[in-house]
Image (cartoon, rainbow, N blue to C red; front, side, top):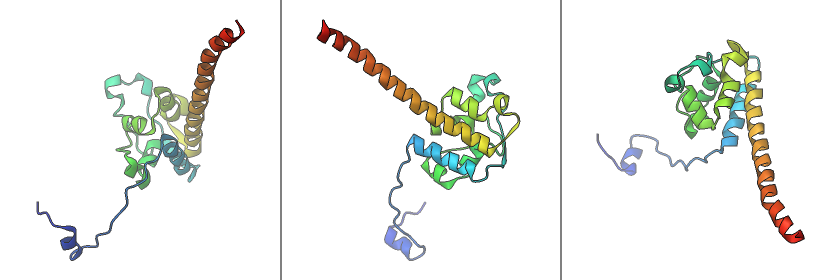
Length: 156
């Protein structure tokens, strides 16, 4: 391999500075996925076959042509953010999906062999909203757990 300085490369190629890319949050990645799915809402997408019955050690390798994960993987922005493939394991890791979320969004037992992109988009959006609600509930519960003993001390 031959190494050259940037100045030398400019004589044979267009070299431009590209500022570091902004890293998307989990929520922003999921919202982008929803936007991609909603761009063609009637598009038929393939589900992943019976995720829960696949051996745990190979489940992460599952994929299907034209799945909701394929839609995400074809997006240069999401690939640039680190989405490595349209396999289940890469999608779960990249989008921060729980097993339950992945099952609801992608599994054939809930979606049939194919689904409309709009259905997948609704399920992705629901997982974003449900997680927010769970975090809010956790915060409220934590607040109550801390507040009740403090109130008891003040009153008693």
